[in-house]
Image 1 (spheres, helix red, strand yellow):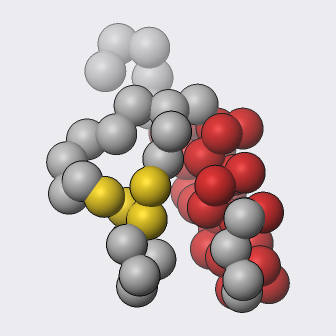
Image 2 (cartoon, one colour):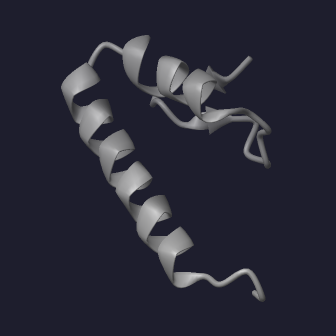
Length: 59
């Protein structure tokens, strides 16, 4: 389970293991300001996609 504080930050302030679907559900779908969160999430996915295309298997 992913938890957020009243400001919307992940808690605890440590590494949180999760999968992408659960993260999207908690970070976007269950928040009041879905439009803003969706833009952040979409940009995150784009960042990870581009990063993966730059990193070779030898890294």
